Amino acid sequence: MNDLIIRSLLDKNQFHDPLEEALNLGISSATWPLFGLLWPSGSRMAERMALRPVTGERILEIGCGLGLSSLVAQRRGANVTASDCHPLTHAFLDNNTRLNKLRPIEYRHGLWGTAAVRDDGMPVLTQPHDAPLLGLFDLIVGSDVLYERDEAGTLAQFIDAHAAASSEIWVVDPNRGNRAAFHKHMARVGFAMHERVLDQAAQGKEPAYKGRMLTYTR
Image (cartoon, rainbow, N blue to C red; front, top):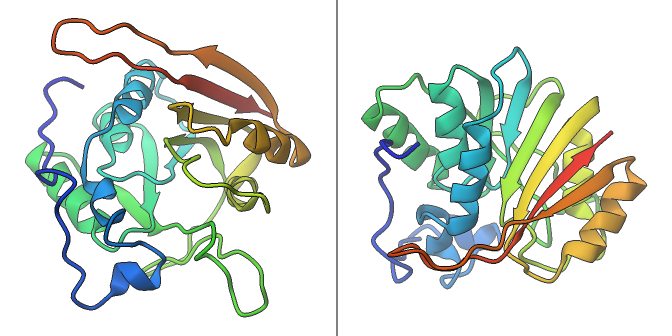
């Protein structure tokens, strides 16, 4: 993982949405650059992905941002699909696969939450750019995806719609405060949860980290 080449934004001050594509998806100017930065929680997820035995299972990364976990999985030969709602994610992901001389990663537009509502009031589980997201996934992973209150449980619905009957879900949460509600929503769709503390003190140039690895199985 350490020798991957990652193209990212410079900092949180970047913004470019001339056609208001991001705004129409509920992405404000303040949150626009967040997809294009490397985050500590994403690194923790990628580290775990690097240890996952490669089999024929189907893997889906949700809210992938720069897709670090997907890049790690692709390099190891896993069957991985990346998804995000940001309009520039796919271009950045393609660029990073080329920089690392990897095959293109399957990508789909995935949206849930306050902006993900159809005319009939149901959440939009998958709104692909080109083709529908077919089949179910054995492993779904997402880092720092519990960033907003989700009283309706749309993220759990999204996961349930794309997870196989027997499946595993990994979520790295930097203690956002929405974990308890997510546990309840996941239990309602049949998932049991195991929680592991990932707290780590600062080491050299590496800052301290506080968070949890949440593993759901059914």
